[in-house]
View (tube, rainbow, N blue to C red):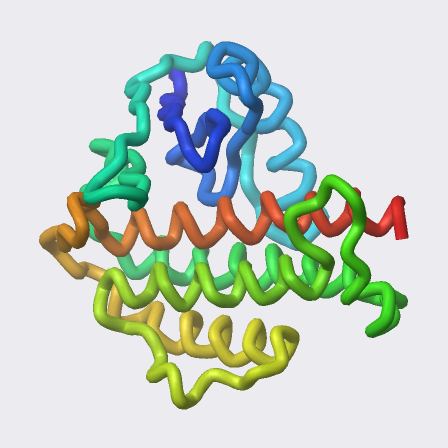
Length: 223
């Protein structure tokens, strides 16, 4: 059986997602390169999942590029990103349980990268980099809070710790606690021209954390 790939222009590059494997993607500044790298990304994802105790079999057969979507600007500077057909179906309870495991595994990877990074190193701003390690942590936590807010599930701002590390924990704990409420949730939410569902929020949350975990890994080599 072939498997589907959905590619989107996102934050200045192209991201090719594999909807059947939550958190599996390949990104590159060139669209075709992002898409052509998907088979290797699938192999890496299956190995990663197995290393975290997730029993996921590989996807056999050729890949089919189901959708390709460009971003567009809504009211001055808001970038509207893709809403794929695969984002629309409600999450089943079994999928919610799987997503919980994948979210925990993704966070474990991030925490591993943070080990042995001193506070001084974490706040060091390197030439040519948009954020320090601490800045990336703040960005990841803020984005996850924002994704949850698309569905009206975000924490109150007053509940968010000022420290980025503590905020990461607080926001993720809230995301995990909110997961059961997402099972079977139907309908879509459209804000600022962009369409959201529970499935899209989970797709974006996993993509964002895993992408920036890789960025932290690369920053460590320069600290």
